[in-house]
Image 1 (cartoon, rainbow, N blue to C red):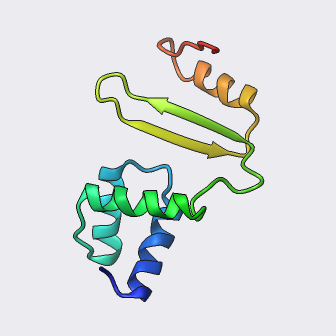
Image 2: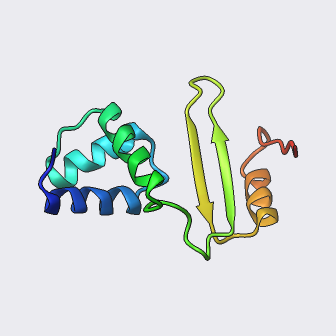
Length: 103
């Protein structure tokens, strides 16, 4: 387990990069802190942090978008202050492959 000061630093980095994948976060922690940690350990710690409400959406982040990569099954959750209609429009403008499928 990390000393408290390093754990707080790692948590701040994770919160600042909360849209990053586990692999990306692993690389960021290695670059910024010299921390060598497995993706599994990052995931376990983020789940504990989420359970305590430390990485939840801020009050101004009123839109939550879930992205699932079909090929890998990787799931990303993006929290934003943009209205859902704006997010949809940005995705549709990103290229011909973008399709919108409302639930």
